[in-house]
Image (tube, rainbow, N blue to C red; front, side):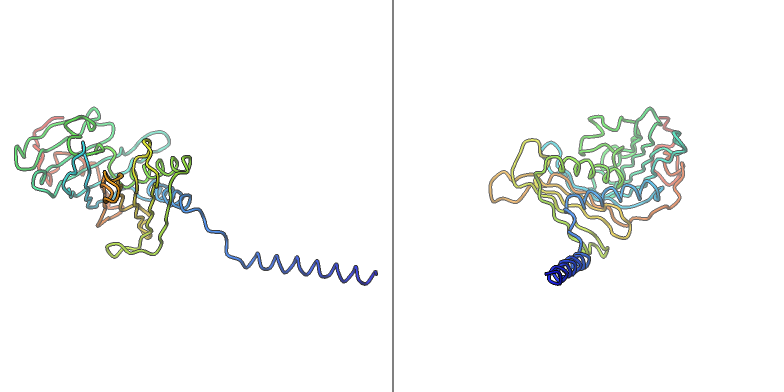
Length: 275
């Protein structure tokens, strides 16, 4: 009897050790796609805040404004992130935009420097009529928002990452979406992670039916976002709400205050204009 108990004990110990070995060799459980996507967005935000002072890029956008889908607009953009020493901002968030297409806005230039010019943007009209008019507007005024969904003060990849985080946190609470994470994709020759979020049930508080986000794996920044509304009729394609794509991104190029000054000789603003 004593030998039997000892042998049984050995079996129990061996079985426990064998199970522990299997558990150690087993792959870790996969992270929930929505939480993984949110973590990626937080990583992108952290990288941009800590490692990216400024950048230039091309931005192509298409937006639905007041129910009408605006033509694709392409622009060259310079952005300098806000830099602080303690609680003091030593470099304000700054934006320069030059529209390249379509013809109705080609040549339009916009400058925004946070905290300057009474919070207003400086605009050179561009386009096919009154191209050289230079004026100042509040970034969220009806005139400035006539053909866009967001003010120029919210442009840029860092603001996009913040918006993705806000949406992701809401989705976590609502628990009403399906998220798919695709790693190893290539877009325009760039290695990317694709995040796709979809709602299966239409609800009034939902901002979109589906959304697609691309994160550049090497730069660790969001380079594309598109969102679609529910179709008007069952079986129809979803309706594009907004789409933004950042390309030819050059990081930490050393932008200065002169890059965000309308008197810069490389720009077409009226040089005598006084904001």
